Amino acid sequence: MTKRHGYAVLSAIVALILAVSAAIYLTVASDDGTPPGTLADNRPHHGSSAAPASTGTWVGSWSTAPVAGEPGTETAGLAGHSVRNVVHAGTGGTSARITLSNLYGHAPLALTHASIALSAGDGTAAADPESMRRLTFNGATSVVIPAGGQIVSDAVRLTVPHDSDVLVTTFSPTPSGPVTYHPHARQISYLADGDRTEDATGAPYTRQTPYWRYLTSLDVLSNEADGTVVVFGDSITDGITSTTGANHRWPDILAGRLRTAVEGGRQLPRYSVVNEGISGNQVLADGLGRPAENQSGLGRFGRDALSHPGVKVVVIDLGVNDILRNPRLADPNRILTGLRTLVREAHARGLKVVGATLMPFQGHRGYSPAREAVRQQVNAQIRAGGVYDAVVDFDKALRDPYAPRRLRPDYDSGDHLHPSDLGFSRMAEVFDLSTLGGAGQAEL
Image: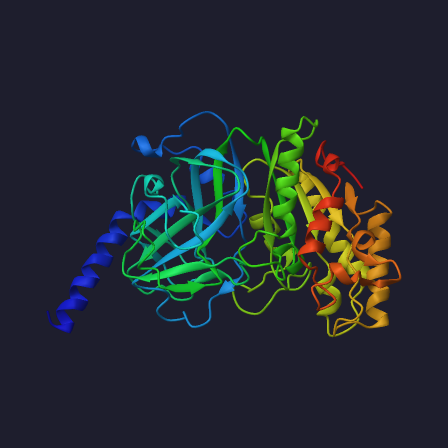
């Protein structure tokens, strides 16, 4: 086959994909905070594998925030490669669906094949072959996601145990421009050449990656949970210094602690917990680019916090980067106004908001007495009850009692800003689970 003939065949294939998937455009949610569940909840499911296996509640089992376009993928994207994301299901269910994002793509993203399976559990790309399921989108195995858009798959029958690793694999045959990704996954995922979407052996997946690509959420139809808690924050919530592959981010530990308490008979809400942390995130300032990379908390709150299925509570741990990354001295009142704006948006949806005090950072390269004073002013207002419905005092729990402007040494990862695994565990431990109950206040 000549090169010209090859290009002609490839063009014909792409044209066919676009034609088959044209109707999908009508149901793709653009980056406007549209709840992903609204795309899948009211649409018909095709085939026995796409029908929910039992009753239950759709909740978030895992999530991550789209952060930027992956460097090096500006032209070709990951055309001709299978992307196998490994994610950890915090809550179990009997059916599953996923959300894929092309937020930072400059061209439509054509996916001709996608699958979901349980990990074989050996720390590789291998899947449990009995669990392998082909994913569809409005009944079609292929889908085109417009630049800036996202799509929710049809539900498939799959028993997902809590605390299990799940493999979500996609294949794109054509260039799509920048790949939407989350760079600090703290989890190893995989790449393979060619369409290896339903390969269970994992053998073709010879390239490891520290990123999550395209995938932004895994929802399950669950009898374990009646709602979702969204933890919204920066690198501390992202777990940037936690042990890779160990699921030691503090929201992971919080999810397990809440489930154990409910199973033990405590009268607490039956909620899942999902993580919407972005390293470097600020309340007020966006990163560069259009759309903005590392979009501000104010800009991404609707998409990343309010859009999850069954969301009941938002936990906010945000603000320290507004202090550290501002080339001038940050205004504490502007930070507080931004946080209160997030709370008002959550209250408008009937949600409760639990907020965290900002932890100490003396010893970090960005520390100064003036910045410390801003942190103290923000924390004073948070503790006074004028920002959130309830407060978790991470500052008090993790600071060094002998040097309270610093993290306690065993809670410090070594950079004097981010916690160690023990510090993340301490954050989850001091979180008062009872604050997750009830509704948000109408006014603060």
